[in-house]
Amino acid sequence: MVAARPGRADAARVEIRRAEIADAEAGAWCHLLCWQEAYAGLLDPRRLQEKTDPTGFGRRTERWAGAIEAGVVRWLAFNPGLDVPIQDRVIGFSSPGPGRDDDAPTPLELYSVYVRKAWWGSGLGQRLLDVAIGKEAASLWLLEGNERALAFYRRNGFVADGARVDEEFFGVPELRMVRPAQ
Image (tube, rainbow, N blue to C red; front, top):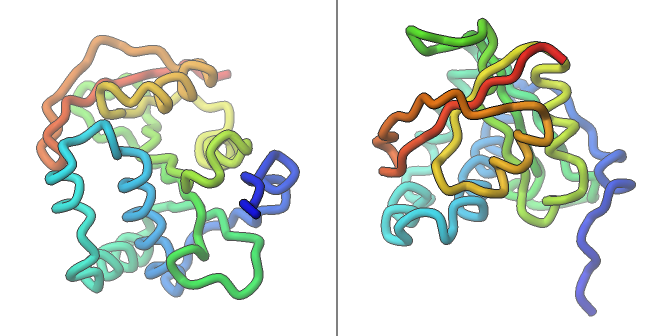
């Protein structure tokens, strides 16, 4: 028997809270697994494998812990299941902060919203977006060709502003989107 995909009622039960240093390993696992799930078919498979190889995972966890310690805001969504392995403890996250671009169109930037594939369509991404930026004006960058993310952000009032950069880490261009205060 195949387990049912989590729905809106399940997403409503998910605890979302600000990340603490003790959450760094679970958050880093979520980040890595979300990249694998969200970018499969969007990136060159070898490049995706190279960038998401868990070898040296300790460094990824250290970066997460360092960012949290430095005050980077990360909102984490915790799996409501009991006794889940650390890789599945965090099922999504979002992160807002000050705009990083010299020509930032808004003071606030949404750095990320990621949700594990099993939770796509459950409303969890919406909850993470809402806790991260509320109704404030914001900008964000997303990988070109990521149609799922593009549709999500459009539903939330974001529009492409014409800015485009070559993203070096994954080797795929990024597009900037902006939304006014809601």
